[in-house]
Image (tube, rainbow, N blue to C red; front, side, top):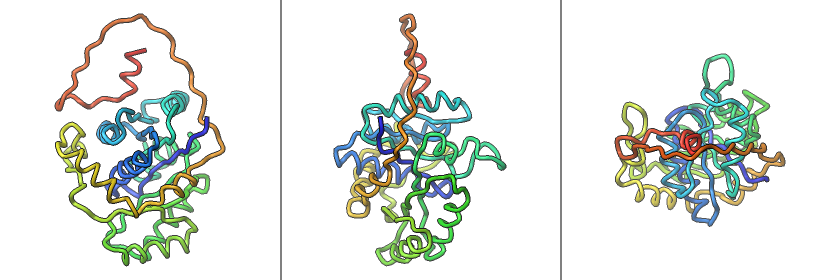
Length: 269
């Protein structure tokens, strides 16, 4: 099976990967496409936001700290089945991982392991032509990484967009495929563990609807999907072994929602 695979990476933490990812999910869902979301790394907050944007599909963690390469490939294959698009949100900056001397645990490692084309989110606030230098550095740092496009966040105006888009495309050859204006109405408050969880954010539905609307007219969805096509098939998945049946209770409410979907899968199996 071959489906468009989209990895949304960032230059650094706080660049707006989750905002852009959720916005793209909503835009693709509004176009009638079944989207299967994933998150690189051990993150239960971002996956909860993916759940809310992509219900009834659940977001899955692709984490090389906890998961073997084989299990990661199997999970990606199994849960991509039946989807029109597999959309993966990266972790931290594109090349940030478990240590400072290898790509282990990084978004870049996951991209190469699963054959994912990457799209880089750049925070454009306070920048113009320098954004091209930034993107060019990420593009050349690892030639084995398949970087195919750029998404811009926190853009103040159409004029500001041109000041970034034109030099990025001229200097790197990468297309700028979409952008989001700075809008406090779609921001999600942070706390000591990162963003507030989806269950804690009472106005989440309204924010998701607004976020999807902000991308209308600012996002080249058709070109984005075209650039996401890959010739390499999704790695094959291994069927689960049958297990005896028993009943297991799980606490689930606003206080108890820090879970990984793979743990539920393993309990069910």
